[in-house]
Image 1: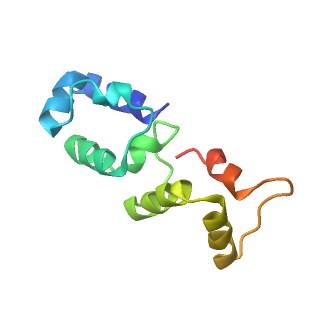
Image 2: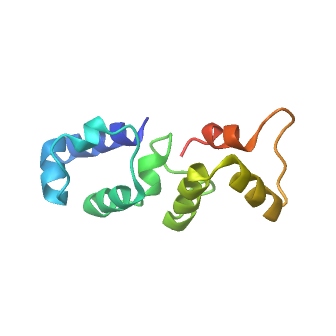
Length: 115
C-alpha cells in the first residue's frame, strides 16, 4: 500500500475527504493525489494530523513492525541519499564500508529500497 493509499484509508476512517485534509494542512487542492512521492515535511504534517508515527505512512503492512520502523531522521537520510549523484553515493558507501552486490551501481541501489 502506497503512502497516498494509506492517507486515503486514514481519511476514510475519520470520515474526511482528501480535499478536507489538504485544506486543514494548508496544502494545495489536489496536490496529494497528483504527487507521486510524499515529501518529508508533508509526511510529518500528515502523521501529526492523524496522531500516528510517520513510519506508518510508509509501511507495507497494516501493523508497523518496529524492527523495520525508521525515525524521521533516518527517513531524511534515505531521501538525501536518493538525491545524491552516483559519485556521492559511492563515497557514502565507502564511509559506511558497504558494498553493493555484483553488477549493481550506486545509482541503481536507491530504487530497490521501498520507503
